[in-house]
Image (cartoon, rainbow, N blue to C red):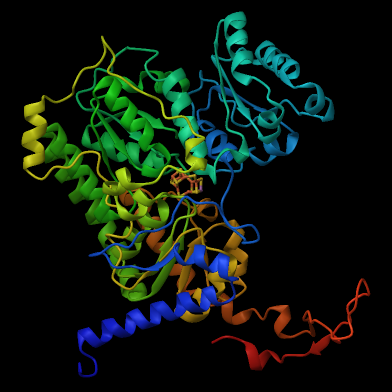
Length: 574
Ligand code: CFM
């Protein structure tokens, strides 16, 4: 037997502890739910990565963090393009809830138009549900055009549109011809997929068909790239852009953060596509490569180490001594400023534990920022990512196409007869790859996470509560749906969707903001001063019972309500 405290023993203990947390989470579930959730909540092993049942339907009744397909299309991928006029075809609620609710910031030039402060909807009523909404949609497009005269109008279908069968694409085609501007539509009904992820795919297809490649004017800068999958939440894209500019790299389009319609139409002229959020935009990178010959690879500007690594990889791609030297110079300058901030935060935060449950990329990216300051990730999971985001892109051929994913169009893309222009010769590419350079790469979250950490897809409130009680994280990164559940348990929660109205957190400058913020959140004394009401006031407790006297339709007998007064001293957490 291994003696106490050997690494083998410690690892075995960790494995038991990790499994115990999962068992506790699953205990409350009925057998069918348990079978499904057990495939989505796993103990990690980076050397032998287990398969995650990701991108499957949430079980009804479980409180999920996910959004809908319309949200992924209108809200995430296309919504941030600021001079397109976005019209939601549907009841007013969908338009209202997608009105400025995501922090995709923009700063257009004075002469440019910005429509993002508006929320346009056809305000569908019963009459349209019964007799069809195409007429009202046509009127709405005309009205919006008459008032704003935009360059392009984009239409988004909500659930009832698909149910009643309005042909939004026919309306878009007719209005495009009539108005002489670009009008296009998305069949992104909320129910179309299992989460917002389906909306990303639908949006990628639409942007590719209707915008990419419309303007061939090249950019004359020496090193041109796009940053795909960066949405300028809290100003992240601005930090990345400034950093790349310092290095002498020109960003032609950021999809879709602080970006104009014209920039997207010219995006295919670049020499390289870099991908930040793999989940939301990998389709676009693939399609642009096939049609125009633009290579792509994954980058991450979240975290100092990752930012430096990404810059070096871009420089290596361009194979220019001048660029490589400049990149090293910039990294050295930025790190000189950042290092004291990082060291101060590390001294206070090292060894603290974090759990991250966000979207489809940040739960991975932000682990880098935490490791910069010596913090440990004990558990992480995405809301709606696919197996490749967990296990790496090598699993793509083994992912089974189910009825839900079959719903989403896979565009067949071929090389453009005129404009396909490989950015590197096959010999150059082969030489780079032989030297260890990887394209179209993403190793996923699990390869980077330690052995015996937890990986939980589409986590529920119930599971988060168990994780807090048993895993004892010092901080959780999540979103608004969980934030107050978590904080009421005395654990700080950093929202990684909205950044709690803080940020930016990207690049070196953003990293400094994040280190300080996490240090502040971990060390605030606020939790010690707050006694939540349920710890000092009488609480009602009730339980459901099957009373033996209950017969037929008679109202069930109830247990008396149990009034309990907890004293603050008894229950205040340490
Ligand atoms: Fe990509 Fe995003 Fe994310 Fe995402 Fe999102 Fe977002 Fe996100 Mo909220 S595109 S997958 S659908 S990085 S809105 S900017 S924060 S869930 S982790």
